[in-house]
Image 1 (cartoon, rainbow, N blue to C red):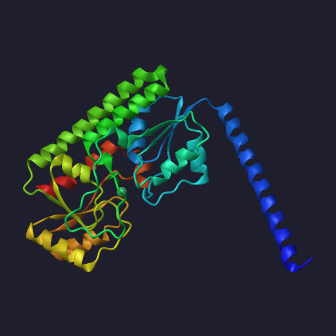
Image 2 (image 1 turned 60 degrees about the vertical axis):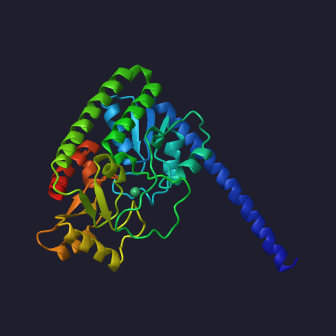
Image 3 (image 1 turned 90 degrees about the horizontal axis):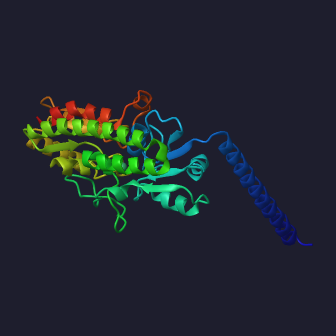
Length: 327
Ligand SMILES: [Zn+2]
């Protein structure tokens, strides 16, 4: 036997052993998961992103037979998320799986295609609102990568109008899943919608009394639905959510010029961002200009999550920021 032949046999054996091992492991995992299923009869609801998770949490309320999972988890960037093996098992075992889709959650389609469990109710929450294409934002860096054909702006949750549509769609999904608690779900959803509408009218009041119409982000700007809803103009270092974090000197200079020209008193940065660029711009503008954090509800920080902050409470936190920026 020559060396090549020996190596070939060793390799072939290794592959066979590997495959057998993998099959045994998958089987093991299957039995583990299904034996867990016997222990608990809770309905399992899994949401990929924060807004849907928060709305579902409000709708489910005190209902004890539902277990809700926030797949992304607090403090993480939705754009760089990829489900782990344990996340895949959570989706596989879900009764209801809610996701946003689009380029941000390109993984969702692949996961759904690969699922064995065909009884999972799937809700692509973007199907329940009017989506729009990602807009070019004034001042923003050119994106290096080409947008996919037909790609939509995924940050649908930033307008209160969409938030209400999302709550209604998720409430209907919960009713279908759990008829027995349908009245409770409707009641909880209506209470939450009332809170959304209350913060909406407070923001509208600030917008009605504005002295300028432009918000300036020294950061990413994932709030186009919000801007369109309130009829606000916006300048930003990046349109939507770029993977870049450092804008060019030219972009920064443009934003400084814009802020000086329009007497903009607040340079915004978003949650989970250092605000470094916004602070640089604010310092350069001077004249009392300051950097402030706006909540885009893209995700919550771990601290805010542990404090039980919600879409409504975080949007309420924006009132002072918007007042300072627009009035
Ligand atoms: Zn984003």
